[in-house]
Image (cartoon, rainbow, N blue to C red; front, side):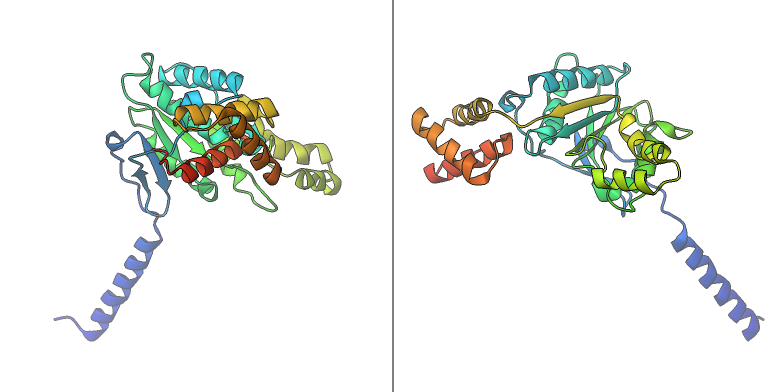
Length: 291
């Protein structure tokens, strides 16, 4: 017969055990990556969420970035075939197709004759989830498929130290980057950090050079740097005409040119994004769905 004291002890121990279980991180379950070719990483639930239809632009519609396109395709094809390839940082002017290129290259390599026997998987990780990157790497490390882990608009500000997790995963940790994973990121900044932050480190540090080296060394983890710059008027119009032809929009070329230039002027920018927004406006006025 148990006493009331024993019951109290048992109840207390059970509460302690339950509390400890809640504090232990959940072990991620092996994802079934055969259900899709693209996923979004959700660290709170420790799982890869399938993306049945990726929001992407066809490769032939990406104009004015031929050199960057060819370089990234070649790097990705090597990786898909199990050959050495580099992490890639696509940096530069906004709206010039950096993230669109990553998604288009993923589709192109999977569709190509030289793709690996197993489809290449694309996994998007959000900027605010970078600290969970080691967990994602552990989840896919032993999978037979190969993965592009993609972070759009990657940058770090102020006292943010999560960049250290990224550094360790890319090259610096004991385990390092798994052989079946490559990391692609886009950013408006070449060094992923604002210039004033780097200048502040230089001015306040005992050894300014070492302080800046700590920050800049993150970019050095990317073996491939692809710079995207603002497009010329001719390149902008080429994008507009390419979109219009692809979607079969019935517009007089001279009128289309005039309206496209006015559209860019009112927004103070010429870019692939501006061209696409203009085409959406034209299609909407014509009652033409872009599907």
